[in-house]
Amino acid sequence: MTPETSKERFHRMLLLGVQRLRGRPVGAYIRKLQEWESLEPKAFQRLRADRLADTLAYAKRSVPLYRSGPWSEAIGGGDAEALQTWPVLERAMIQASGSELLSQSNTRSHYFRRTAGSTGAALGIAMDTDAAAWAWATDYRGLLWHGIPVGARSIYAYRQRESALAEWMRNRETLLTSDLSPPRLTEAVKYLQVAKPTYVSGYVSAVCEMAQHAMLFASSRSRPLVPFVKVFGEMLHKFQRYQIEQGLGSRVIETYGCSETGTVGYECPAGSLHVFAEHVEVEILRDGKPVEPGEVGDIVLTCTTNRVMPLIRYRVGDRGRLSPDPCRCGRPHPVIAGIEGRVGDVLLTAAGGRVHGTALGDLLKGVTASSPTAIGRVLFQQENQRTWTVLVQPGPDFGDGIATLLVDGVKAIFGEECRVTVKPVLEMPREPSGKFRFYRAARPPACITT
Ligand SMILES: [Zn+2]
Image 1 (tube, rainbow, N blue to C red):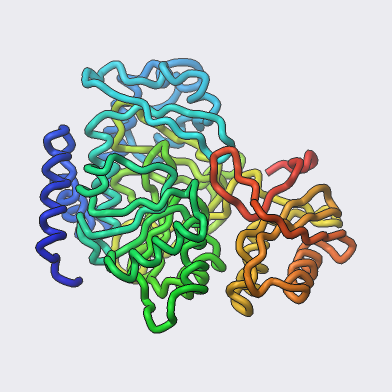
Image 2: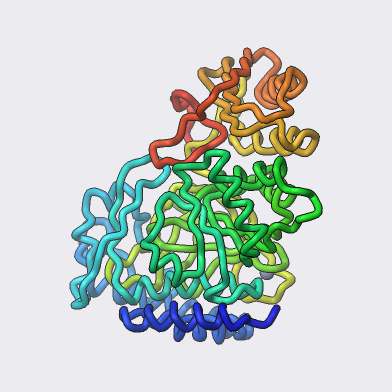
C-alpha cells in the first residue's frame, strides 16, 4: 500500500468529517468492518449468524408485511435455517406494498432511494443516515482492500454530477455517461495523464468507452494511465475486462450490487468476488430451494444494515453461483463464483436450445483480442429464433473481415441455419434505464421458463 499523501489525508478527513456532521459514522463503521474481517473464519461465521438473527427478529417485530399473509409462519430470529422459512420477496411486492415494509420501530427520518432497475420500472427503497453510513463504509472498505485510501483522487463515470463543492470534497471529476462524445472522452483521458488520479470508477460500458478511446489516442508508453478501475452497475464480461486492461493499463476491480441493498460483492486483490457478508447475506435458490454449493440459481439477498426497510430474501433478478471454496487471500467472506446476468437473459438457439447471452461476451473477447479498435458499441439483437441483427457502431478498424467474424460467431453459438445481418449504425439504442447492453431478445421467447 502506498502511503497516503497529505492531499488524500485532507480529503479523507473532510469527507468523513462532513459525513459525521450529517449523522453518518462512516469512519467508525469502516474501522468496525476492518476489525471484523480480521476474525478467524469460525468467529466471522458467528458474527454473521448473530447479525442475521438480530435482523430477522427485528423485521418480524417491526415490519407489518412480515407479520402478515405468507410471512405469518416465518421464524423471527434464529439462523440460516430460520431464514429459509421466509417467503421470497419479489420486486413487484416492494412496488405494491412498499409502505407495509417500513419499520414501525424506526423513529428517525428517512428518505427514499429511487432506482429504475434494468427493466426501467421504478422502485423506492427507504434508507436513513445509518443505512447510508453502512453503504458508504462497505464501499470504502472494498477500495481499502486494494490500498486505495478514502479521499483518493478519481474519475467517476456516472449518469449525474453532484454540486461543484461536493465533487471537490470527493476529490473527483465526473464524466457524465449521457455525453461520451469524442471531445469529452479526450478530456477524460487528458485528465488521467495530467492529474494522475488513483482510480476510475463507473459503469462498465462507460469505462470501456474511455478505454477504447485511450487505445486510439494515448501513447502506449503512457500506460498505465490509471492504476485501478472499479466498475459497477452492469455485468462485467471478460472482453470488457480485457478492453479496460489494454486501453487504460489498469487493474480492474469488479463489484456486484444493486441500488436496493448497496454493494454486495467486491473483488479482492487475489481476484475473487467476495460477498460483503457483514452487510448482506446471499442465497442461491432454484425452485425456491437453496442449491448445492457451486450450482447456479437465482440470487436472493438479505440486508442486515437497513433498519428502515429491512429486505429479507429479496430476489434481485440476477442469476449466479457461490463458490464452495474460500479464497486464497484468507478473507473470511464467501466468494461469488460467477454472476450470470439477468434471469431473463436466456436466448434460444435455432434448434430450440437455451444459451445464456453471456456466450456472446466470449465471442466479443475473441474479436477484440484480434482487433481492439474495430468495434465501438455493439448490440446482438435476436429478432426471432433464427434471425439476428448485429448493430455495430464501427471503430477505425471495422471492415468486412470483422463483420464476417461476428456473423460466423453468432452462427457457431446459435446454429448455422440462423440468418445474421450486421448493420452499422451511428447511435446505439439504450435500455430504459439509460445503460447500454450488448445482447437482447427483441421479443422475449415465450416458451422459456427459467
Ligand atoms: Zn480473496
